[in-house]
Image (tube, rainbow, N blue to C red; front, side, top):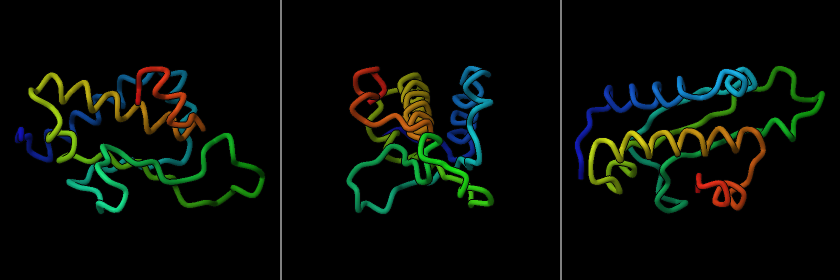
Length: 116
């Protein structure tokens, strides 16, 4: 397995977030991004996880809600990649995938778009 220190991996996630087009980034609302080494394992091998209420499901009741959470998991990504450039690309794809869930896009559609 590749070894990229947590701080460097967090920088890769930040760079992936910086790569989101401004017109989409402005629409991301009430979301916190975190990096963890591993998921709890209950859902199998996860590269990332969106937890929250998608924008498409929010109504007037949503005011004052706690932030949605997008978690990017370092070790699972490192375990499936063969080199640094592949890690950079997988982090980008995972960040886009999880942000898409925030916009209400499901896994089937993400697979069709190449972000599965």
